[in-house]
Every structure is written in C-alpha cells, then in structure tokens.
Length: 323
Ligand code: GLV
Ligand code: GLV
Image (cartoon, rainbow, N blue to C red; front, top):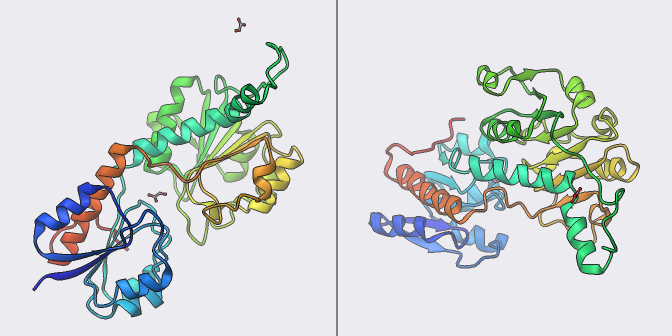
C-alpha cells in the first residue's frame, strides 16, 4: 500500500520526479505558487506519513495532531528550522530532514550582493537614473562605504557565515571579527578573530547577521545593539527577520545611529508595503531570496525529496536534522 505524502507547495520538478519514481508514496500536492491556507494544510496532512513543507509553513501541535499518529517524517525545503516545533516533533518520534550545505554558496553570494548594494546605494542610484535625479557627475553625490581596509563583523560564523567571510576577504577587508557561542577552529582560514559581541559592534564597519533564530538570538539586534555600532556602519541580515527588532532598527536608521541596513529577511514576510522601513532610502529590503538560484532550488528540491523517502522507508536520510 502506497504511503501518503503531503507537499505544501509547487516545488522544482527535481523533487517531484524523485517522489514519483520511487513508487512508494502517493503524493498530494498543494499545486500553487502561493502558501497553502492553514485550513487546507490541516486537511492535507490528515493521515499522512510524510510531509514536505517550506519555511513559511508553521508546523506546530495543531498540524501534528491533524496529521495523526502515522506521520513519520517532516522534510523541510530549507536550512532553517525555526518554523518547526521540535519539542513536539521529538515527543512523537518524527524524523526531520532539511537542506544545509546545498544552499550555502547561493546564500553567501546574495548576502555579499546585498551588502554591496546597501553600502554603495545601488537601489537609490537606479531610482535616480529613472526619475531624472541624475543631473551630472557630482563629487558629493551618492557616496557610500567600501570594503577595502574595513573591519567586518559576522554574528554566527557557521557554514553560511564562513562562506560570506571567504567571499569578502578578496575585497581587501583588513579585519574579520566574529561572535557567537564558541570560537571556531576553521575561522583561521579567514583570520577570523573571536570577540565579544560588544567589541564586534563597536569596531565593525559592516555587521552581518548569519546566525540561526533561537530563543537566544530572537530580538538580539535591538536599541542597545544598534547604539553600540558606529554611525558609519552598515548592517546586513540574511538569516531570520526575528533576530532584529524592526522598530529599533527603524529608529537607528532614521536617527543616523547607523548608516544603512540591507535585509533579506523581515517580520512578517512579506513585509507590508506600508511598513516604515520601506520609507527609508538607507534601507534595502529583499524578499527572502538568499537561496534563489535556479540550480540551488533544484538541488534543494532533490534533497528534500530524498530526505522524505529516507524517512518514509526508515533508512538513512541524506540530511537528517539531529535534535
Ligand atoms: C532559507 O531561509 C532557508 O532556511 O533555507
Ligand atoms: C570616474 O568615473 C572618474 O573618472 O573618476
């Protein structure tokens, strides 16, 4: 008898092909580019043995209860897992798959692009060209901040943080600081200096948040945090929006406490179009596209499908989350 699987969104064909070729499951797909409504999610998981979900699906007690006792595996098409209630999942003995490593390069690349766009004011420049604001080459116009000779601070030097650091060093970065729970031996590859957060904040010209969202990092970037940064520093976040207190960030940007911010993640997502942050020229907001290359999304889809199959069949999962 085929096992029942619910897939919460249209995903790249790579994963769907693997699921159908395996011949062990019957896939029910929320066949849309838009998120599955909560009521449909609760219906879709009923009796499912496998769930393939996205970071926009909150998997909590209600969903797990709706699924019932047959659910064996949750495979998320993401490296982040803050949308999963791991305590409840563990209690029920459900295995979890996720997609680390395969999206590291794409996400690091996007973070560097966002940092440069924010520091060198690319969106403002593009806008001026279109709206007729470009009247001449002007010595004082649209100046920003460069990486050469700078100090970069990375909060959370994990897989992605490290890949960001490696990409930034060739720009002539002078010092690379990082903070987090523990010093990392591999930081030597980028001459990374493990420093207390306060030191990182006061000495860095660029601050990049690349940690995961946990109770410890939730709201980490608040009023006190921004007040310790240089007035000329640029802040970049490509991890999770909830690491930042957005009201405090807005005030810091508005008051000139910090120079600029580039965000690939916000709370909520999508950010409402009337949000105060979007009125600021020194804030660049992207719609959570860190891993969005054709190739990376295809590979994520492939991996998520293989994780799901491993969980369904009780065999190894290529990327199983240990929790
Ligand atoms: C993206 O944010 C992911 O967690 O994969
Ligand atoms: C800039 O284009 C310069 O020539 O300085």
